[in-house]
Length: 323
Image (cartoon, rainbow, N blue to C red; front, side):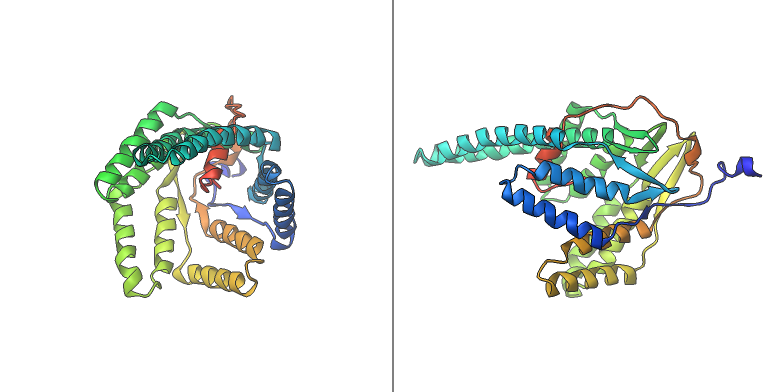
């Protein structure tokens, strides 16, 4: 029977064992060094935090590894802020001309350029983060095409604007489908099967019930949203689709939110490291992979050794993160 144990594997649990008492030292040390160095230390701070979260996350008693370096992120950091410096110089030039028409044009061009750069940043960030992530020396890789993603983002953004935000749910799902369908882990592939109308209905219910319940419905909204994203994410191994499950109840979400809120208020934000750890632990505690995934037969492939962290740094500037 031992020969069949890998084929008919049980549900897989992704375990997260980070500790607030450990993370607090990393968190505040990095804040202090980033302030002292006027932001220069930030790339190394980011890498250290990613390293901690990766090594604290495991499947089958094997942890994930982040291979990125502070130097890679720093180079991306410099590229992004050089471009932004040029953008802001152009913006300030328009502001000091005292010509309202020219000023309006420079502001419009500034934001248009930022919007046009976002798809390239998303592509670069996913490609970089994937190539620098591994488990048991097996790397992730992202095979998407940047121009294909660019046009998908531009068309989706325009349709969202023209429909006053209504198309946003379909755009979000379409973007997630594209990214996941081009994501690989060794010889495993991924997909996202969610539908835009389902996400739209989830968001619409939240829009109306939030006010009717004085915000209390947020608990059910978060649970429903996590369930939607988890259960529509698929792993394909040997032609078989394997799903994720998110098993949290509304009471579990309530406990997370209320304790995190009290920690933040009562400590004036000093408990932020514990809040981060609690949130990570919560997600992985209730996230499981359905039966059928055989981790022993995942094969290595030639991964994309992509070291350009510019896209990742640009998303940081926009306060967006893939983690």
